[in-house]
Length: 296
Image (cartoon, rainbow, N blue to C red):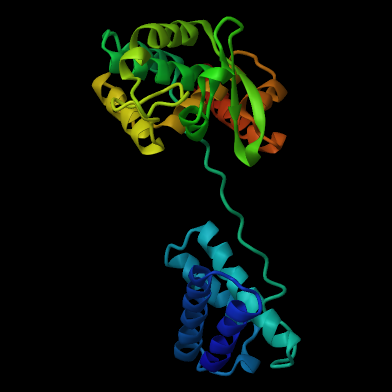
């Protein structure tokens, strides 16, 4: 089996042109399987491998704590290996073909409640350039549901505070308009009038948000700003940019916004991606029911 694994990895490299990292991943998975088959089933020839053996091995991996998403990756490696063997006549049939991939559990996104979100954005009350900048960053994240990359690359020419819109470029290089609410407009106006001119330097471009050196902010720096401001505000939860995006969507849904409208504002290509927020809302409704219904 080890000899056939070597031939298969060579096939991935030369005929399919797959990355070195993927080759290493597949090698690790298949060598782990070969080791288990030899030790627990006394099998070293791929021709003797059965569907039951592969199922037992994958079940063992699950008991060892392998996450469902990782189990799917390992199963794919096993499947393409045995499919390759069968296609080249190195064994009869494909024992991995009947095995279904494990279901990946959907983890509901974390959110801040409305009061906590308000506490966070209103905690910055200073008038320094960085205070005004950071307040505007938090307000825009929460008001518009921008992705981190969208905020970092947001430019002055794409912002209209008079009309309350910002144009951003999202995933797949798709452009969309996002609304900018009143509180965010006020914070952005204060930043643009009173703070950004202090940050502008020789290397500045038209990015809305600038570093203290006048350059555009990096995603890592924006994450740091959000985390530092959340800690300073007294919040005990871990706050990060995408949490504000989740909070934006959840609070819209909780207050009656249509799911299709939320999809448009978030820039989701598929409504099924947005539907995760209906599960968040259902979770909240169940909790309310448990807390207040006399026979819950």
